[in-house]
Each structure stands twice: as C-alpha cells, then as structure tokens.
Image (tube, rainbow, N blue to C red; front, side):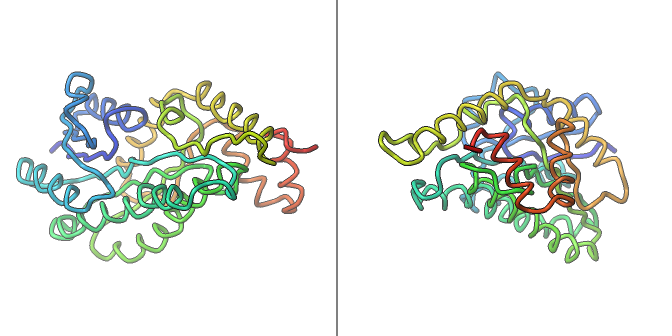
Length: 270
C-alpha cells in the first residue's frame, strides 16, 4: 500500500520539493500552509490549512487527512522560520515567535499525531532541523538555538516512542536555494549601532549562501531514502560537504580555534 505522507510547510521550498518527489514514488502526499488558497495552482498535491503556532488547526488538519485516508505513515515536520540579527538588538517577542514556530510548533504537531500512530503501532516522524543547530552562528544565534532545542528534544522523544512502533528522526539541511531569506525576520540594521557594519556584511553573506545553495531535490531524495529504511538513524545531515564537515571540525578542534574559523568565514576576524 502507498505511504500517506503529511508535510508541514509544504507550499514552497524544501517542503514542496519533498512532496513533489514523493509523488513520483507513488506516495499519497498532503502538504500544509497557513493560507492554502494562495497556492492551489502551484502545488501538485493537496494543501490543508495549518498554522503550527495554533494547535486547533493542527488537530483539524490531521483529522481531515485521517478521515480521508484512514492512516498516516510519515509526518515531515518541515515548517520553520528564519531570524537574524544581533542578539542584543533582536526584540524579545521576535525571539519568542521563532521558538514558537521552530521548536514548540513541531512538538505540537507530534503531540497531535501520536495518538493515531500509537493506534496504528507504526509511523515515522521526520523533523527538519538545520546544520546551524550544531553551532552558534553570529547574527543567527536565535535561529541556531531554536533548531538545536528541537534536535535535542527529539533525541529524548524518540526513545519515549519507540515502544509504540513510532520512529523519530532529525534531518539537518545546510543551505538550499529556497525563499527562506525573503520570509525570515531580519532585525533592522540600525544606523549608528555598534553592530551596523558587521551585521550588514554578515546578512549579505547569509543571503548569498542561500541563493547559491543546493537543489532542494537533494533533500527530497534524502527524505525518501530515510522513509524506506526500517531502522532509521537518530539524525542525518544533508548539504554541501564543507557544511557537513563543519560539524566534524567542531568536535575535533579546540573551541577557540573553531570560533576563530567561524569569525574568519563571516569576516569578523578584525
């Protein structure tokens, strides 16, 4: 029987790429969007309304799919939001919004679907985190923190749910060519700020990395490979070699050496 796959944030970017690729592998795919009516002609699979910061919409979205298909085999927790800025100058309410979407949102999705997966005694929840979760990146510290929190929480969560036949996995992408830069919150570059020059230059570097990033199809292929395995790993990393290797370097280099390497990369080594 074909797998029923539910993808949050399925209207564009990585989520859309995953959904369209899985369709070619004979999966039944449902995506979600806060405003699915805006994308009805741009996706090849149906979108249901869902906002990960509003639990009632999550419950309703799962109900619609389960009522129609009778099961859910795979959930891809992909919805997320970017945030950049000097931590000192980033409004606290914007930090909370980022955590609501990137951390608490995926946990609400899991909480809503687990009763169905327990009933089935099977299911796989794949959580899209980030290579940024493995390191504190300058001017992207809140984003790194929100994704790191999800990474660690899923490590614990998967041990709690294996007894029910439910698998959880993290997949951490590097930079892929998506529209995340346009949708992320940017703390304003304040004239006269002590961070004005460095933040402005770093923001440009970050945006350039996204624009020149890999093809989201590679993420889609990685997700398909994961859902085909009976014993998925705790985590996977997907992206350019240097981005994946940066995680290895953090493990083996002295912390100050690694810090200097990051600062040089972002032209902060003055």
